[in-house]
Length: 380
Image (cartoon, rainbow, N blue to C red; front, side, top):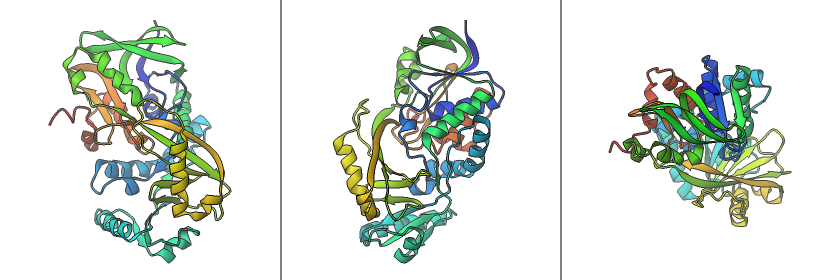
């Protein structure tokens, strides 16, 4: 019978970051992926590392995201050296632009709250913002500038985690679907697998990082009481596209009403992203792309004449509060979950992977881990 110290279910960025941190701790790791590496949400993300633009002041997303952001440059260098895959880390900064009086009021209030928490942000007048990014819309009222915010290529970041873990002995098997857990009493002792790798695999611990499909865990744990206490995970379709040939070139991440714009090293501009309740339908649609193609030139008018490159989509695993569930489950031994990252799987990947490692090793969770407690919803 095949065995591993830890079996990780899922080959997206959550599973691959967990594999890296676990392998780096000296554990024998096996990653099982039903489809392909970074094939779903991790392959359909712009790779933004923007906790200040997205996280509410004082929120776990902002505090944990800020901690993660500080790690990314060194992390990407190490992963690149070990895997040979460059995640394309760029400290571009981000501009969140106000194109109306109402947006200006809202953004300036956000600026004041962020500044009060010690975040390094600035409020820029239109002329100052135009120096950072030429070609912004004439309606510009001002912009929130966060110089520390950055971005990576999400699929490359996922592959870099996976390759670095493999360099330390981790195994990655695609085309292999986990169809159930094995139990010895209340202890998870392995997984049942169908596909390229068939049969039962013994494991010292199992980590569930199956993204949108992590809801199957309720079935696997039934009829145990904890099954009904697990947070729901809802698929939210995110459509995204890339454009080429815009002039002037995009220098920084730009957030406008209805779209964000992310410059990539190859000269393309990634435009995202829709949020649609479409179930498990991951199709690219005309209406979804049209929404982005209309929104993008509002912030940077030159994009109206850019060449369309391609469009793609993925299903984000969304939780009721938009935060992931990372940790152990009461009454179930040797099982760790890490899913529900919504829009922040890339940003939070260093935090998520380290928390998984600590839980597997039985270490005391970091102070910020409480916000990600998988049973936090049932406690109310």
